[in-house]
Image (cartoon, rainbow, N blue to C red):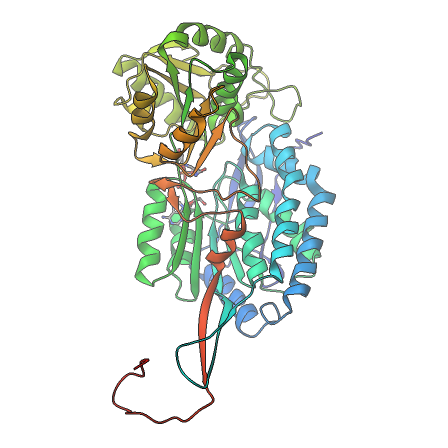
Amino acid sequence: MLDRTTTLQNYQTYIDGTWTDAASGKTFETLDPYTGQPWALIPECDNTDVDLAVEAAHRAFDAGPWPKMTPTARGKIMRRIAQLIEQHAEHLAEFEVRDNGKLISEMLAQTKYMPEWFYYYAGLADKIQGAVVSVDRPDHFNYILREPVGVCAFITPWNSPLMLTTWKLAPALAAGCTVVIKPSEYTSASLLEFMKLVIAESGLPPGVVNVVTGCGPMVGEPLVAHRKVVKVAFTGGSATGARVNEIAARTFKKVSLELGGKSPNIVFDDCIMDDAVSGAVSGIFAATGQTCIAGSRLLLQEAIHDQFVDKLVSMAKTAKLGDPALAETQVGPVTTPPQYQKILSYIDIARSEGAKCVLGGEAAQKAEGGGKYFVKPTIFTGVNNRMRIAQEEVFGPVLSVIKFTNEDEAIEIANDIAYGLGAGIWTQSLKRPHTVAQRIKAGTVWINTYRAVSFMMPFGGYKASGLGRENGIEAIEGYLQSKSVWINNGSGGGNPFIMKTAS
Ligand code: TXE
């Protein structure tokens, strides 16, 4: 059971294998979204701490044992990380809930699943193979080395802090990279607990994983700009992602971005209706709608629209709002005060655009807990895909229902958006899922399911939803680069003033 003691916990950050205060000595408060009260103090890092952390990661990469260790030995340490997460999954989930207000059932499912990433990429560590190339020159022996890129910066958001760190950390460690992580200023505590219980106990050499805490402009920007960082992996909003990408481009860093979404959940009239209703509810109200893959645009085929909306409203209105630390709670508070304001402002926008509110549409006043950040599950019908409520990411429990007549129109609406992260399709047809999945411009398409993720399945976005893919075998490519080695075993002759080509 979550311990909500009122004394503020004082955290230090973790740089070069050592617990330390911010160089400035400053701290900032982190809030419990359920009570609305501060519960911990986090070091307020700045440029100086960023530099210390990147230098530590750089030493660990350049001179330290990590990249030099055999991949098999690296894999063993990663398996130890997985075991430590298994051991502390409940504790870590409780700290996630305290900091981000998401449901204990959801956060526990995540922390219990996280070890799989470390097992999977630990298994890949000693299967990173170069190649021998029979090059088109006589007497040559050519080969390609696959090398870790170097120091990586991770910038993570507040919605699933440890899970989204894991998606980056496991492939980076397997590749032999070293890392500096900047968590969201709203949810730094669970990462610091993870460092204490998992990373510091795992046998990883000092400097391989470091943390700098603080806000985006003060810590994130200098980290992205640092000349010794060679790769940036970011999860967050599209506007911040664009800024991170611009800064990283100035020093030619590799970048992967996992950004926002406005995913269509498309229900055809040949669906199994109860499954689709449940999928629509889970798509938008799970995690209080604060997921990048929220199915925030529900596309309903005309013939079933009214019946579906009735069933949807009946199910959604039973959602139990309350303390996210209790197993029976189904919708928790919004994580951050600015996010709460943003959601309420989009409810006003939807009304002013002429959408019809058939459920919720306001803040929920909760006496218990004391927190102010609850929003009632909200459904708007009569939404037109050109409205802002259909086009812009709300990141809250607000669903836009859009009617369509046929498959072509559904696909046109689904793709008529800046984003392309996920999409759901509900149908019993055998043929339709494949044709529709091919025509949807999104990184993930779920058919008769929604919000499923796995360490084995690539995850990422089309269009403004991001660059690159996390998870699956291809994710490790983002942390590797190729080196071509040429060995001439014959004569070194030829004209020294022209490039050596085949002719
Ligand atoms: O995210 P930010 P915010 C979306 C969602 C939400 C909106 C804003 O729509 O309403 O983004 O949320 C760091 N240089 N998503 O403001 O700013 C920041 O400190 C470097 C979708 O909380 O993107 C944090 O660690 N870093 C999303 C991280 O970026 C900077 C999850 C994410 O914060 C920075 C979260 C800067 N200039 C929000 N400014 C998803 N894809 O799941 C901020 N940061």
